[in-house]
Structure formats: structure tokens, C-alpha cells
Amino acid sequence: MPLLFPASLVTQKATFTTTTSMWATLNQIKRGAEKPKRKNVTVSPDLQRCPIRKGVVLRVMVLKPKKPNSAQRKACRVRLTNGNVISAYIPGEGHNAQEHSIVYVRGGRCQDLPGVKYHLVRGAGDLSGVVNRVTSRSKYGVKRPSKD
Image 1 (cartoon, rainbow, N blue to C red):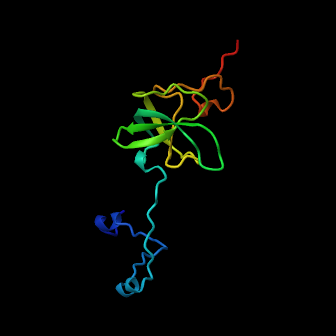
Image 2: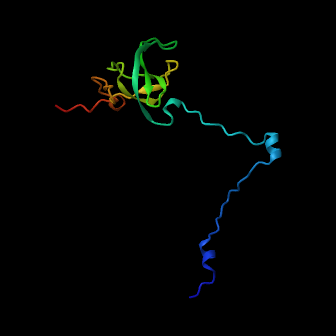
Image 3: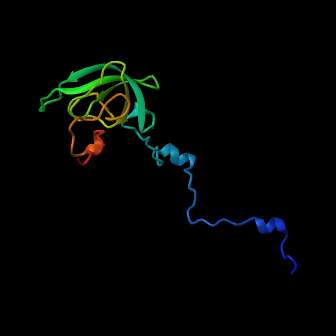
């Protein structure tokens, strides 16, 4: 059977779309009809869109929370691999973090500590898991207890 159309026309396919690309005219832009697009503001900018970053502990410190809370929250200053220095919260009871420890940092602020926008990952790097932890073990880097 002979081809009715040339081969170049057969390979070109017409695209069909229901949406039209609408551009604002210059007069509409001057009038302010087109709203500027908002930039997404990240809550953990020093991680630079990474879920976790490695860092070195510079100093371990104890902070006092904002009112109305009262406690001794453990935190540390960390220099990340991208060169940024941040404050990070150490979750769980007890820790072995000290100066020059290699730790992993994730996002997530500590709500009652001003300026602390990051958490350390327990059970990764030089930071051990929480001792004698039974519940919520995955959040604190604890292995499943053996059945003996």
C-alpha cells in the first residue's frame, strides 16, 4: 500500500492542549495585575536542600529555654562540611558528644531554644544512641533489644 503523506509529515505530531499560556501585557504589568511569585523560604537554609549533613562539633553547651519552660537543654555548635557554623540540639537523655566529634545534622528546630534550627542524628557518626531506650528507638538510634 503506497504512503499517502510524505514521511516528514507523518512523523510530526500535532500536540493538543487545553491550557493556554497567558502572558501579561506591558500595561497589565504596569498596573500591577500580575502578582510576583513568592520564593519558597526554607526552614533549614544551612543544609542547602540536603536531608542530612556531616559536621564537626566545635563546642558542647547547655542552654536555657524560653519562658514559660525551665530546663537545661543540651546543644552544640557544629561546623558543617559546607563551612557553615550552626547550633544544633542533642535529643534524648545523656550523650557522648564532645569537641571534634563527627556528627550528622538534620533539620528541625527546637521550639523553645531561640536560634537552634537543627537536630543531631543519634546513633550516627561518633554520637551514640540513647542508653536504655525502649520506646521510639528509631528516633534515638537504638538497636532492637535481643530476646534473652
